[in-house]
Image 1 (cartoon, rainbow, N blue to C red):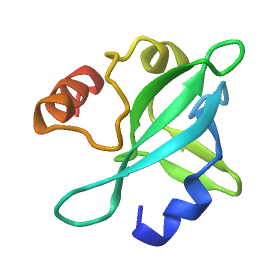
Image 2 (image 1 turned 45 degrees about the horizontal axis):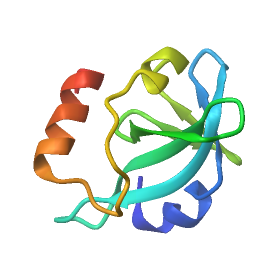
Image 3 (image 1 turned 60 degrees about the vertical axis):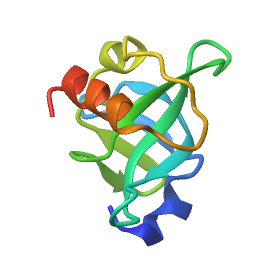
Image 4 (image 1 turned 45 degrees about the vertical axis):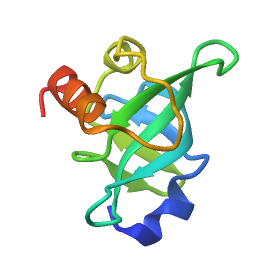
Amino acid sequence: MEQNDVTALSGATVRSASGDKIGKVSQVYLDDQTGRPEWVSVRTGLFGTKESFVPLAASKLEGAELVIDATKDQVTGAPRIDEDGHLSPQEEEELYRYYGI
């Protein structure tokens, strides 16, 4: 993903590669070094009240949808991290470990 993809990512519907709807992109998190989009937070749950982080490493934009290489259960079971606009290196490591990246 490139920095100009940030606008397209905001509010995009998130789907798994198998086609399951997971939620909507809430925020896009950029890499501190490169400025490229690296993570998104996804609103999940019945009313979009929960947010989970999803890596963009193996994802692709298809129209207005973000197709990710993770299952709905993986996303909803991801470690809870406060979304404050920045991920610490420790938080990133925890998420990378969780997603097996």
